[in-house]
Amino acid sequence: MSGVQTITLGPKSEEQRLDRWFKDKYPGLTFGRLQKLLRKGEVRVNGKRVKDAKVTIKPGDTIRIPPLDKEKTQGKPKIDNDRISAEDVQMIQACVMHKDDHIIILNKPAGLAVQGGSNTTRHVDGMLEALKFDTGERPRLVHRIDKDTSGILVLARNQKTARFLTNAFRSKDIRKAYWAIVVGIPEREEGRLELPLSKRGSIGHERMVVDEFEGKRAITEFKIIDKVGRRAAWVEMEPITGRTHQLRVHMLSIDTPILGDGKYGGTEAFLSGAEIAKQVHLHARAVRFPHPGGGDFEITAPLPQHMKETWAYLGFDENQAPEPFEDDL
View (cartoon, rainbow, N blue to C red):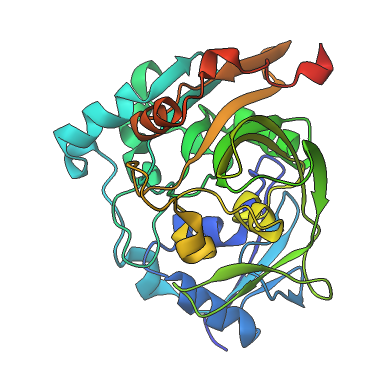
């Protein structure tokens, strides 16, 4: 095939997912088109076929690329704040809870996607230009949380920090604690769920399911903080692995869907007669990780308004919760 390129990633290249690398180099190449090229073997990594566009590439890897001149320029985004509305600039900057020379910590609102996708044009990734501040460098995403999940999102302010944090996530040096309301009461006060997960459905309509045969390893630890009779419980969860929708599927697997999560729990994910928001009640509450500048860093994000109102409605007091990661104390 004429025009085929083979690119070798240099020693200073950032470890990242293959689809994100293509998004940066070829903005007009859709995720679906990339998946098709992978299935046909037209895009390869280290000479081998790749099934999943989300595979991680690293320094020294070689990428075989078919002719994509059109995709390289088509849809290329501007790199200035003109493409971000003044309202969004104000909103995303107001989400900043912490900022230093290495990292930015956001308290992401529920309903805001981290990255674009099918019919998703408003997302954190598209607002990162507004978070350059004094460095003049666009910060980098190093992990994701669901669109419907609120709470902590960690950004790297430079490539070196991005590599550091990506490795920390991969090696499980980062700990995360989530709060949720679940419908029903788990049978155990605390426990560990080890249920492999895989994706089912067409693009734009994917769902994660428990799959003992082909699923990827997924582990969640949980404990009940408080409860209301047999109707609902306030739980804290720590994902040991980071699979898509892991917490939502794992809690559903023990017959206690997360409140408001109609995608997975259907009608069972709602409290009939309760005057509470019909939103997912899942919040990335706290994070702890080695700081790129040295020492450990820990931060806690306050609940969003719809969850604050539900806590009050159910009689929960967020100030009575134990410290996150108390087993480390």
